[in-house]
Image (cartoon, rainbow, N blue to C red; front, side, top):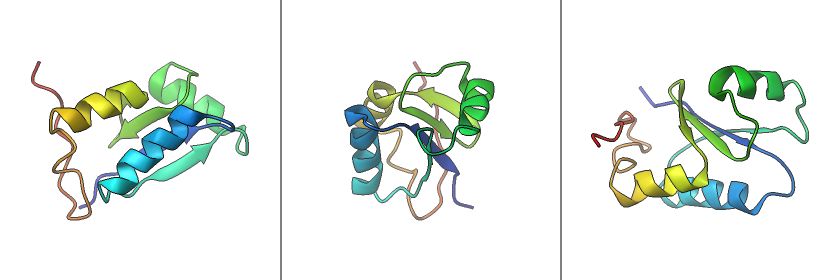
Length: 94
């Protein structure tokens, strides 16, 4: 089963674009909730993460944080199995 990846974004947002580019480069499918176009998504973002900063990435219901957190997960290999083959998210062991 493919993991569900949601990226909460807004316009304009360079870090949002960077997060989407990183996921795309790794072949990771994601759903985008652009809060500039979907104001109801703000309540969902607040419920899921407790935050309103952008981007916010949620993998299988677990808020992992923003672009820096996603980049760190990519750097330490936690995104390696989160790909089109449907392998799941592995939380950092640290």
